[in-house]
Length: 260
Image 1 (cartoon, rainbow, N blue to C red):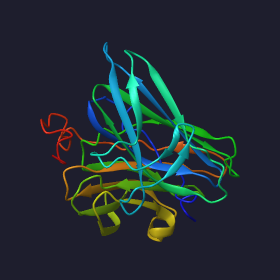
Image 2: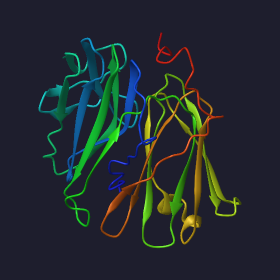
Image 3: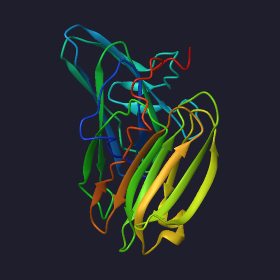
């Protein structure tokens, strides 16, 4: 199962996502195989702002996707992908073609000159979730430790998408805990720079089948992005990761400057 195949694992990192100038990302992009992604950019400023978006594959390389705004190269935080200038409070949507029989996946790197918020709509035409769609905001990438709930007591499964957006490799640690806080199973794996990884939890971690609890995700690098989705028998719902205030780095003065 390629995360339906790793299908657009997504979820918001909060009920209202804060928007900052500079880099943000959508931790999973999928197109084809019954999946279509639409990105909407909204200028929250009283003055014009620029935006640029490019796509990156699982291995951190340029991912070319056909969109209604053209065929896009990757935005590597130095070159320009699809983009433009938004007037004050204006918005623009870009939609992937979604026509291929096979699915292409990766993540989206977004650069803005001002406070331009980005959201992604994922549209699904694959049974048994035909007609489903969900909208999530871009992640400002300001954390490296998360906790999210899972419930594998029925046929539902959790899908995870994890991105290392940094230009250095990272070690990622997953810890599954039961409702009593005890450890069910753990895993540690390496991620190269700017790479993406999709995980179907019940397949990769069968010890969690029939149990519920939390998944803790942490990294050795400064920033990480995590999206999660719960696949039920006929419906899909997002799983919101929790970030303790003690873990967060929202006051980091070097936001967006790691490529400098």
